[in-house]
Amino acid sequence: MVRGKTQMRRIENATSRQVTFSKRRNGLLKKAFELSVLCDAQVSLIIFSPRGKLCEFASSSMEETIERYRNQVKQFQTENSAIIEDLQLQHLRQEAEIMGNKIKVLELAKRKLLGEGLGSSTIEELQELEHQLERSVCIIRARKMQVYSEQIEELRAKEKLLASRNAMLNGKCLVQTKETIDERTQQRANFQTLNFGEGSDVDTGLFIGLPQKKNQAR
Image (cartoon, rainbow, N blue to C red; front, side, top):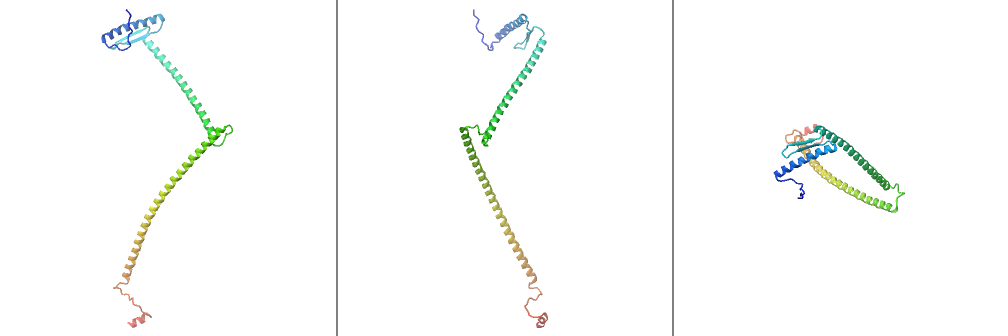
């Protein structure tokens, strides 16, 4: 009878799952023992059943095997970290080299824009450089006109604000001037009333000659 291929998935039936676990656990322990004896290998095997029961096998001391495993993992991590650091350093060097080349290209382009180092340029490169400069000049002029327009609008707004404040100050000045004139007029009227009123003893009549003649005439 040909044995069918077992599908690698969880066995749903609890009884079948427990039977399969027991058989394969025993087989695994046997294989571990055979491997340790035949190959003189240090083998340790730890198994926890679905119910939490521990099953283990060690060709020597389990603690020694676990400690050796930890040291091996630590050493591997250290070596792996060193490899990763070397790779990162190499990557940074490559990036630095790429950036250095880009900087050189940009500096050369900058010199050409300033009219320097054009001896090795071809006619096509010179024409492209000329078109680029023309585009740059157009952009600069457009920006300059925009700045001019913004400044003009700002000055107009300030002019309107100052004109409004000037009109308000002129109005206040006129009101204060009118109040001052009215006050002075009222003061003069009050002064004349006090000095030349009906109850005054001062003779306001017009006469010619000395005061004595005036008294004789009376």
